[in-house]
Length: 154
Image 1: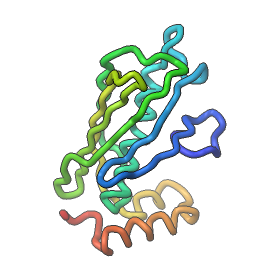
Image 2: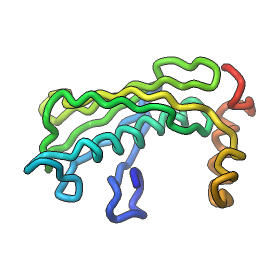
Image 3: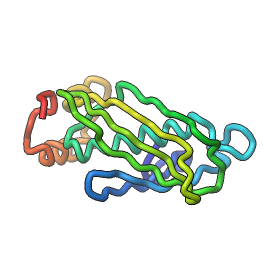
């Protein structure tokens, strides 16, 4: 739904990392309309959830969203590029606290987001569906974490 080209109705986010920050550029269009000419809050929240979730590559663990809060500061016009950024604020045991923001090309911060992700292992996902396609993803996250059990505090 969020990143990648496989879902033509998705957000099509191409996500990048620079140091301890994850970022993506997004331009909401008619697929994401709420009020006339503006992006729907749900589309904005989905983009935030997806982008903030990419900080898990920095954390080096698969995780799931426990909470997501979006503060809508300004209307988000359609057809205007916005840079979404996110970084890990802190990690307490399995809880990974992440912050983010959406800034228009005009420099205006239109929304901010905070989220808490809970580190899990592959068994969490296997209980809900076939994860064979995710084997390398889980292995890569484990390698990045130095082989540490994601349920342990860093």
